[in-house]
Length: 254
Image 1 (cartoon, rainbow, N blue to C red):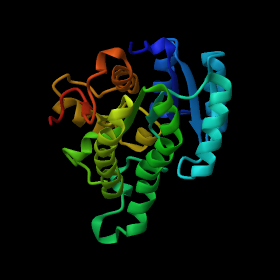
Image 2 (cartoon, rainbow, N blue to C red):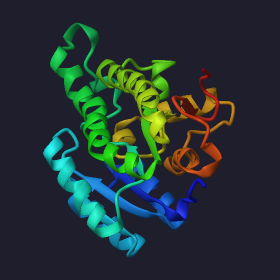
Image 3 (cartoon, one colour):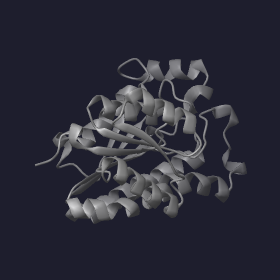
């Protein structure tokens, strides 16, 4: 039988702030054991863990470094048992500020590689560390975080969008590879969220413009995005894998 959310141990990468913190709170609300990963945001991650209680703890690791990820997974296993769920939310430092973005004529491969190292490389490191645990249990849930800018690059953040597009491709290929182990791998893609650390640099007028173009008439919140992540970890999504669910109030389709 597929376990309920309250029976799961969940690893949220980049979980100390922003969307990651909202995801950690959502799983904790449902009674799951939550491992909050951080790289630089130790104080925020430990504060969040203290707020959420004894079934939550913070674990430091750079998800692009296999040895750090392996050590983190071992620590989580000692505290809560091996993670059943990976939510790969970690993001290389980024600010959604169209005026400050790197335009195409000044973009370098290093700009793209920096984003891909965390988005795709981080997912790879985490999956390789967790695969033996998934195989031993015959169960696992992986949820990656994407963006609706892949469908509608209204602001061309080339490095960020390219990395998320590559992560979607990796999500789908990993779903094929891990499916025989009882593991589903899906992506949840949000639009501009009101408000995270990354979107704090976005001018208010941009939020208003997006809200006006969205069928629901408002900008999606981190909490609404987090609830969609819960769905993919829940028993109700047990037959869904390799999919990309766009959670943006209907702004884009497909």
